Length: 181
Image (cartoon, rainbow, N blue to C red; front, side):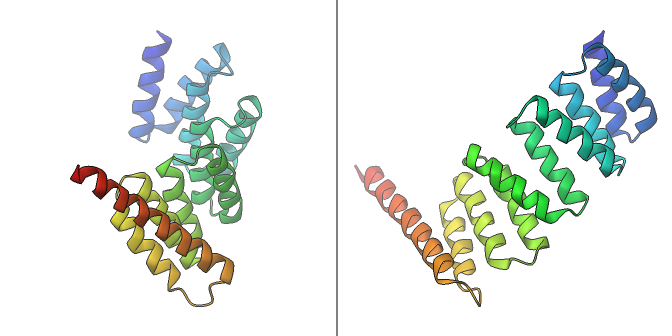
């Protein structure tokens, strides 16, 4: 019964029937207040209903129970982005990238946040990493090269981007050699 109610609540959220969905989710949370699926559904509901303060509170409390949880962190970052708290989103995503450096969705989110903050090079570099994680190395090199052309780039950032481009090109060369055999 709970699984059916949960699925029904998700369909209500998708249909933008937030009041009905909220009642069902709150009933589910009464039974199991720490179930991640219910917490995520509740926070997602509040995010979609544009009740960002409530949603962010749910994410924050949920992460106190489940620190470092990947889905909670990712959805929290999305809610921060939607609520236009770009600095907090940026910090959260960077923290999560230390835990999950191979998650392409985090790089895509970081690219969006950096773009909102006006950090063109960082936005392109993050999108380059997204493409790299998706197995599109040539697209990654293109975006990292574009980031490298950004005016006012520090020596450190230029060196970091050049090193990453060199690393990806080296991997591509190695892959070509392996495929020749």
